[in-house]
Image (cartoon, rainbow, N blue to C red; front, side, top):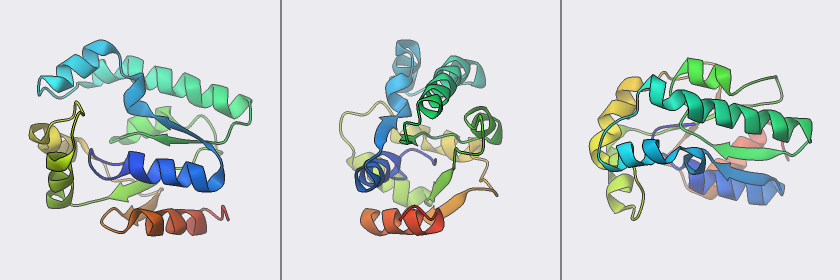
Length: 156
């Protein structure tokens, strides 16, 4: 979890590959209306996010029921969102913690994504840093972050 530009997709794909798990990006589950709203530079409301979070929860429950180990890259900025996405103790949260300048630079260099740098401030305002997650420094090398996650979660 983390704000846009923290490295969720990059690190998530590397982690999934290392563990030979499935990878899913929560951005791919947004309804078209949410993508259009964000593409026009408007932040989503909790009301906008609810159907998206419900879809993610249903997928997490499905993957869990099928014993499909999955890395899900998802912002999950608020504690209430994370609670919704954790149907049981088998779901771990990893927080990619990055400062504003780092992620703004990354977002400004990113091509073809609906998330605009102008919306970054709203993400930091909405962010409720987790106290019960594995926290890693988003400024580190992605491979190093993956190794740290594996070590902290005793995955390898």
